[in-house]
Every structure is written in C-alpha cells, then in structure tokens.
Image (tube, rainbow, N blue to C red; front, top):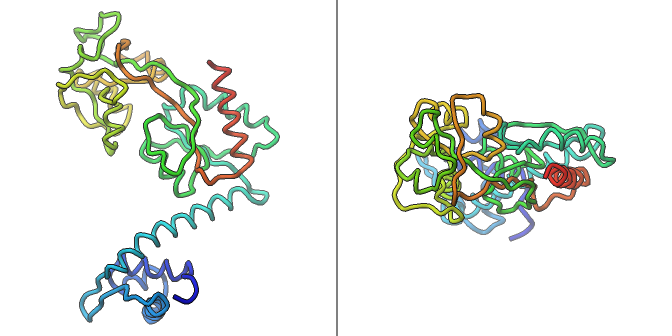
Length: 300
C-alpha cells in the first residue's frame, strides 16, 4: 500500500458502502458519479484489495470492504468529534458544552455552573438537557465536553468522577397498600409492575428495576410498562399502573404530586458522576470537573 487514505476518500467510500449505489452516493456527497467511481477505484489500487463487487445491477461490499467500512466509520466519527472539540476550544468563541438529564443532576447543576463562572479557566457554558440515551453518544461524537450522568452507563473511552451517592426510594400511589409502611424490602415489591425504560441496555434496565448486582433482588417479578421518561413513569404510578425507583433528590422535586415515597432496604444507591472523553486535554474542562467535585463536597 502506498500512502495513507485521505478523509475525503473515506467519506466517499462510506457513502457508497451505505447506499450500495454509486448514483445515490454521488447525490449524497454532492459529487459527480464519475468522481465517486474514480475515487473508489483509486482506493482499491492503493490498498491492493477489491472493496466492492459491482455489476450493472448490484453493488456489494467484499470482505475487505466490510472491514474498511467498520474502521472508516469509527475514524470519521473520531475526526468529526475532534473538529467539534477544537472548534469550541479555540478562538474568541470558545465554549464548554455540558449535558445532563433535566431531572438527574442531584441538585448540583445550578450551584456548579455559578461556581464555575468564577473560575479563571472558565469559558462560557452551553447547557443541553437531554434524555439518558443521548448523554454518552454526545460525549463520544464531540457534541458535548462533559456530562452529569447516573451510573451505570457505558464508560468505554470515557473518564468519570463520582459526585453524589444517595439512597433510592420507591414511588407509589398514595392509596397503595404499602403506602403506610415506614420502609420496604425489595421482596415486598416482587409482584409490582416496575416501570421499564425504553432503549435501555440490559445493565441499565436491571438497575432501574432493582435487579442489578448491588441490589438484593428476588427472582420473581411482574413485567411493568415501558416508559420513555420520568413524567410518563410518574403519571403511570399515580394511576396505579406502575411503581418506579428514584434517587431521593429527584423524589423531593416531585413531592407535590399524588405520590408517596418509601425507602427500600436492599436497593442499590444512586451514583451521579461527571464524565468526559479520555482524550480531552482542555483546561476549561478540567476546571469544570474540579468545580463539580468541589461543589458536590460542599453540598455533602
């Protein structure tokens, strides 16, 4: 192989690999089809391997093409993440993008942002409040610099520091038979429909249902409804269609609803961390992480 592949070539190849049609790939890229064909042919010559099997009717990836597609997708994502991060870090428009769940910051976000603004290394903060499933992808693809996120999560490629560890409680309707108990055991809830969270990994799903390794769970359980967010989960609890487990700080925010909260013996705690990409070297990010830790210690 002579020379390395260029980013423009990788983008061209990925477009063809995903469209499996040279014309559609050319439209997607805004290029002439002949340019796309020449680019792929040039890549094949330099790599010494056929990447695509093509006839007048069908385009298919070869084994070598499948390997390159997987690697090229990762490489392009890393390049785009780096471009976003550099664009935010440099020049007069430097900023720090922080993401968090709207109800999942343990009460730290406001005090942390105020304290960070006074740090000499601080830059303006752009805040994005998003769903749980968006937090890690935004860190990985460069759309965010730091996230406040609940454990467990897929931490591959990320560093994190624990900020808050607190009890979780069971949210029940006020007229539930167990509402009068001072505290509960997980076994008391074995027949209750515990809410399941949409698009959650098996590890995260087990945590939210009290079936994770740190919880003293029981083998029998009732399948609960699948929910897409906290508002939906709490509404189903009010209607007697589900129960759910919440960090104590979150339960306090929703104490005015027709719900009651009870401590649960044997339930794993809630752990809130600040997470960031392992490759990050920004002084502004380091200052934010330091401020978040100091704010959490002061609040504790």
